[in-house]
Image (cartoon, rainbow, N blue to C red; front, side, top):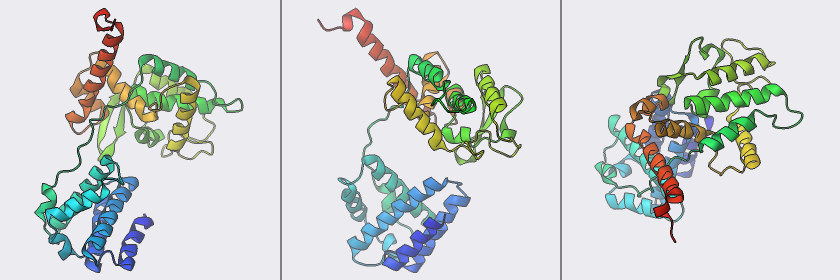
Length: 324
C-alpha cells in the first residue's frame, strides 16, 4: 500500500496538509488497514476522498490545512465543499466522500486530536433508491448452460468446468465473487455446508446444493495444476489464484452470446440467488444470514425487486391491466 503512504507525502509536499494533520492521516490509514481490516481498494477510496476534501479546503481557506483548521470549520464550509462537487460528481460518489470525511473526523475525536460536531449535522445528497438487478429464472438457466461450453475452440475443458463451478457458487450459495475466489483448498468441506469469510472478516455458513458440490468436484478432478491444502481452490491458467477479471470477462462474453442485459454481472448472480429465494417463499431473516448482511434493511431491498417483478407480470398478463 505504498501508494497511500505516498499520498501523505504528496500532501506535505504540496502544502495541502501540515505535518500534524499528515501524521493523523497516516494513523487513520493504518487503523483502517489493521483494526477495521478494510480492503486495499476501500482504504484507497477513503483516503482519496479525504485528499479531495483537503484540496478543496486548501483553496477555500487559502493555505495549508491544519488540525486547528478542521476543528474550526463551520457547517457552511462543509456545505460549500458539497456544493463544489454537485456538478462534477455523481450523488453516490459525494455521499461516499461525506462518509469518508465523517469517518476521519470520528477518528480525530477518538484520538483526542480535534473535535467538530458540525460534520455530524450535515445532510448528504439524497440518493435514488437502488434496487438490485437480478436475472430471471430463464436467463440464469441459459447462462449456466452456456458457461458449460468452451469459451473458445482451443480452450481446455477444465477452464469451462472452473467457470461453471465459480458461477454456481455465486448463484447457488449467494457468495460474492471475492468470497468465492478467496477460498483455499482446505476451505472446501467434506459435508454439505461451506464456511465463508465475508466483509470485515465475518464468517457465515451456507448450505451446498448437490449441483454446486458436483460442479466443484468436476473442476477439481479436471484441473491440471497441483492442489496444496493452503493453495487457492480456483486457479488461473498458470496455477495462481484466479483473478476476478477472468470471471468478469467470461460474463461479458456470455452476455453477448445470450443477449443478456448489461446488468448481468457476476454480482447479479448473488442478487438472483436472493431474489429467487424470496420469490419462492424464503424467509427474509434466513436470506440475510445466507448473504452475510449486517443489517436486515440491506436484505429488504430484495422485496422491492420481487414486487417490481410481480407488477411487471401483472401489467403484461392481467386483462384489466391492458390498455384498449
